[in-house]
Image (cartoon, rainbow, N blue to C red; front, side, top):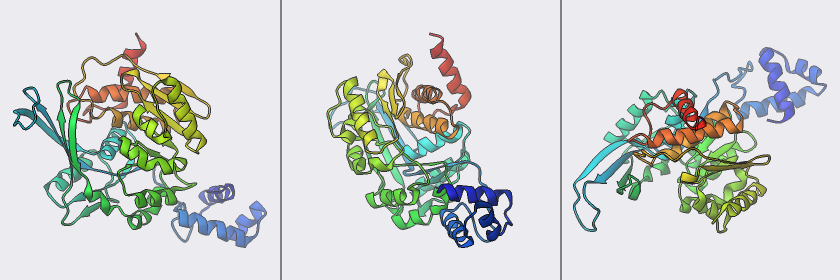
Length: 367
């Protein structure tokens, strides 16, 4: 919104039946100018129609991206090529965006999910999982005749990823036209967080809808996706890469702290507003126009599953952003969420809550 549109919206909120001529007189502008601004507010979704019905939904974020079934296998014997391994196998609903949004809502905040899934058995499981966690799936699409996404991971002796394969072709259903049909939901959101595995044209449509209205947050996920989103850095509010992904985003070698800061400076100069670097056992580095913060908690000695740590960190950071917390408190929440995640056998800790994160923060602050 422009400043004038903000003024007009506040006047309408105070008196939804007010005449355009009265608004014009209050702001000392012409009635035709008021009409233009009101038309713009309607197009952006801030006004929902005649009579100046103001959108009154609670603050929420929108996640756009993958939902799939995760299958994790841990061999009971040393890994060998071309060998059938007896293993312990668990499965759960996952996908980076699913994990972020689910963690976010478990912290007590509101979210809508825009995802695509198949009309198979896995699709029903995905629907039930979102329903269980109270997440609005009404803007998503169930694709007839398509299999739902699936991610299969083989873990090493340290419970970390040894290798993985996935099929996320169902995401192609989230097309630019589908995104434009969800314009109202996006422009009314506090922020939008997106999955880099979306098609380029879909990412471009999201940027077009959200530009100058709703900030966009993203986790690159991998080096390949970091290279893919490099042209869009200027359009994002926030990115959360690891060190390797940071190097791909900034197109430079990142080998030490000095390199990290230089790479972050380079991205901020391109138009990015905030960046958080996940450095595994070394904690995180956060930078914006005013802050440069290194922070870490003690190393977690009882890691059960590392796969969900980054998603939990991202969710907690988004929570802090939406709630307007000081950056230091937001970073503490992010670090504690990562610890909560790796203490769980699944990608999402079933006990995830602000209370749990505060307890983990207390454990670390008392050292």
